[in-house]
Image (cartoon, rainbow over all chains, first blue to last red; front, side):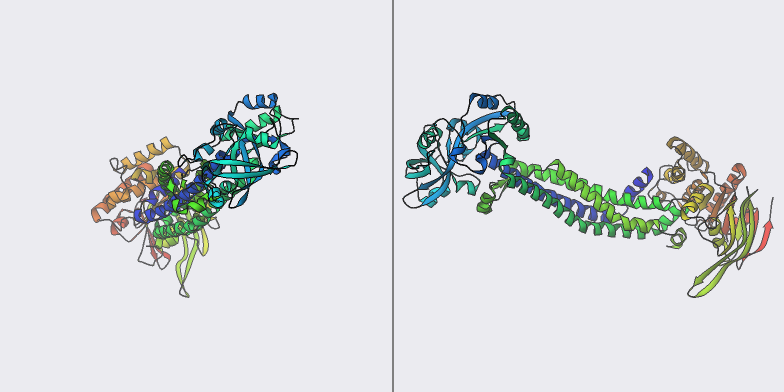
Length: 411
Length: 229
């Protein structure tokens, strides 16, 4: 078989221009699809990363039922055994505690339903990126302590409520005894995250302040944990689940907390692979056409090969190898170009600032850093390989069926 | 000992609704070690007979055996196996595989036969040296002259030690001097190695050198002339 692979390879270069046209078509197809996949991966990664960094963390510990109904009643005391399980977890990088519940805020102009988060600013800085997202200009700054009675709101909310840094607003909520409580806060700072839905809904204040106002005392809503690597979340969660079983706690990974995000990432991946396969169906015809032309040109030669004892199946294999060689060269060239360009763009990023509002809706950020997964290479290689084989079936059968005598008389 | 036997061999071709009788009941025996030629004018049936003996074409009627193997009714795959192992072909237009070098063209047959790499190279290079191409092993056909290409074709035809070599007008594309040299070389191989050759030709040089000359006229053997035995 090696000889037929070699003949297939050498035949490929007999008509360099024609082969190069097909190879260019294949490699351009692969390059464009990998680039599109890379951009989509970048968007997916950033969407996930931004969601993790902005609010979810990698793993969260709640009182059982809190995730589906974020009420004060689902709070828990961070008992020493719970905190020990968190601190001793081998995958844990940082953690922070939070109080969070739904509330209403009012300015003199308007009101808005929100999720108010009571945070410990110093620990929050290590777990989420809200500090980085807080504007440090025109008087805006981050919260300073867990006792802070000031509030951080997004620029979007500030516009809607017509508020500036230093303005006062009222937060209204039901406390633990179901009493409606209203408290005034001063706007300490403004933030802007890459996720517009988050900005429309979340505000921050000091955790101790919220615990006092709500009557939670030292109870909390959430321990948010960042692991050393994103891939360790399942192990970290499993370890904590086994250590904290029987505490009526729910220990959720970011995937448990944002299943729709996981599903959309998987859907985007599948769609890209399907698009890849559809686009490459056109390449089948290009390869098949080239092979048929090559066979017609070598009709006599194939007849000679058959007349000296080459079996029809071997002739078919030779044509198959020629197609595979075409595909492999195109695949190699396309992948090399894609790796080069995506590495470059992965470092510089692609600025989609002109679609800023749409990008914020997706939570991707405006600068996308394309990247490729091993699976992208595997899938693209399989698609190209399968397509070249499909493309070669008819020409290979045609070549295998050439009658030596007809071919010997063909000039 | 008979290598080729044909019995009442008929071949009809239908062309544009007209049936052409190319062979009309040929009975022929070619023994091992013969250096024979089929001669006759165009359309006399030389090439048709050679193609049927070579398993490239089927007779309309009659039988043909190569080394006691009946070629009629063999499958395409089986005929390919017989051509590979028992018959060597030399064509008028050399018909080497253009993407393979001289030695690769010769090795090709042995490779299809499953001969191992070392033996393949050794046997092919030895044969090429015998036909005077020891310095041209790694040249591709387009880098060789017509005479050299036909020598490679001869080497390819004999490297697997077939029962018979069928040569269809092997000198037709060569000048007289090169053709004569090639024929002498094949005659030499016939004498030294006992290889059986059957030519189809209307080249006088081939007819002169052939030890047995079968004259075909209108698809029949008109004359079977033994010059030496």
